[in-house]
Image 1: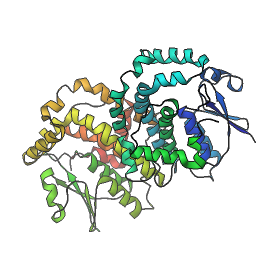
Image 2: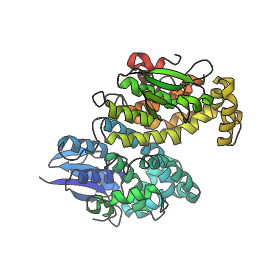
Image 3: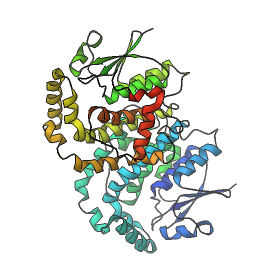
Image 4: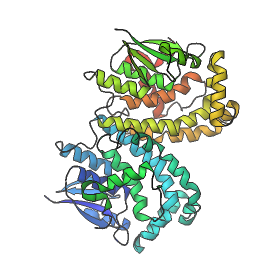
Length: 227
Length: 227
């Protein structure tokens, strides 16, 4: 049975989508292979004959699942014998809160640090779409959004304190072993790391150590930013 | 076997400590009764003959456990047959991240909204200690810390968006049933609700609906603010 993941790609093939990284690590966590198909932002509407608006999209032998959290839940239910992605039913709700924290507290800050760099990494056919949609969302130019980022870096690093707090008690957000919550936050940080040279994390930050550990999992899956 | 929880108390007996609320709901979750002993801030060093610096402190028939998260973990291990507080091993790490989010993102904001009100609720013997320690920590007077709070209320409410996000997917942070993560965040909000008349949550906010539901659990345990 073939398994395909449609994965957002920059002009040079780098895979930078935070949500696609969550899905790719969820697949690896369950020990599942999946071919990835690189897509540009403007190619998303044509995936699988149309009707898609975001990636990742998983085609699992004809079963189509969209949205990274939905993919994790699908894999959890479809592969109950593999290692759990949530560590029990109660873990899904908490993972949702962590997803929300990433979405509402971290993503806006990261946008302010690297959004213009992401634009620069895109294929020309994507750049117009990206600039227009993001400038409309933020009400400013990409250049204005990213300007003065050095002054906002310390506040961003400070806002990761909840991750450091968790890591003082266990090696992973999931506890003794990584769970989907780890991949949620890995994806968030991987987004900037792949798309930009701007260094978000100080080298000795425990978050950076944990991040490197997640990238090393499953044969270094998180390091394969080109495919 | 007697079970006693040392519980921070205001001058009139109101119990307002976020950490003590977490411990009280963890006990109720496990179906355990515990007598609570009201203590003032300045009485903490004398609890159980000395050596304590914070509350809650649980005396479970001679076994002494301090710190709300440690109490939850103690109860989880001591009462494995009762309903789980973490929903599996993986849930502890995620609960730690949520504890950290509350500590580093929510508590500082709530301090800016109600810290002077908390001072006003304390017994006279506690007020000097509280004013001195908090003004040293924040570098400002209690009055300055709380001044202009109306202008910060919307930002605080907006920062609760991760909770709303989780609640769009399940009735509790823990999913279908409440877990310790729910009590962590309930305690955080209960702190302000008990100690201050300043209304943190808009009435129709899904967070307010969830909060009221947690307060109603276990015979309305969260409503017994005086004992």
